[in-house]
Length: 108
Image 1 (cartoon, rainbow, N blue to C red):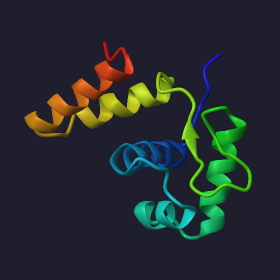
Image 2: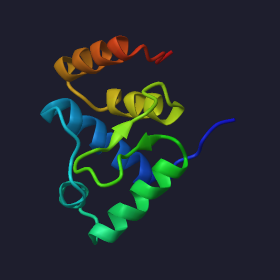
Image 3: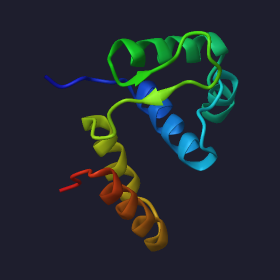
Image 4: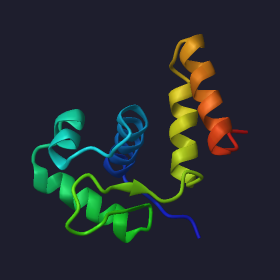
């Protein structure tokens, strides 16, 4: 069974992944709000709660910056890589392909 995510949920997931890879820890809700231009922290919380409910990410209750992607091989994550690869420089393409290989993603 395939889990369907909305465009906003995919954007939150991608932002979470990029931020965590760059900084080594997950973003705060306010950082997600600012990074994606969302209207409020409660909008971020709703998207996060839906992603948790769908089993895509998890969070540790009561802990700050505890968002964690559970499945890097998630179908929508593969799709995000494919979409990103269509509109990047050759250097960025090499980086994305290398990251996909490290994560074991099948982009074929």
